[in-house]
Length: 121
Image (tube, rainbow, N blue to C red):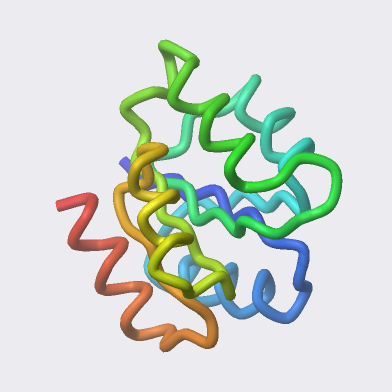
């Protein structure tokens, strides 16, 4: 059974590169360009893992994570923040809200893939 990943980011170049790399890793890839699109996708699909930016229009990553953790069918879904917010207080907040990992931009595609595969193992 193919693994499913939801990539939530408002930067098209990041979305394209992550979509490409995870399709090569044999994932079914869902894309959302902001938190509200992510919430709509999550009403119909349950991914194995979510790569989530924090700073996005409409609904930010923190609000999206809170929705995920408060929804019974999603609360055990792995969530990885992938964001430019790299202060210790940002990282602490993200992990306290329930993110499984907190990765910062700029990033290494190789590192992201290994972190995701490790979380799903």
